[in-house]
Length: 88
Image (tube, rainbow, N blue to C red):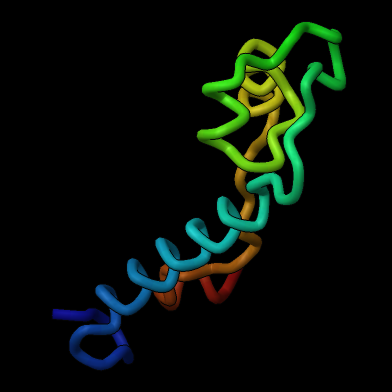
């Protein structure tokens, strides 16, 4: 049951839209093309298994982990749709 002026099922639609946006963002961040033999940040050799698992990989696991920790997700959209959030 949706609340306020929204139709039934609107909450689920909002959840699905948020998940879809997150998946699109994640896919857009995936590398493409040929993999590098060496990490572009620290020049460590990237293992063959990683190169095969992730086509277009450019960073070693350590550097990739550091970058992912720094990234934040900000959708910029108000998906709640409640009257209170619309007034702010």
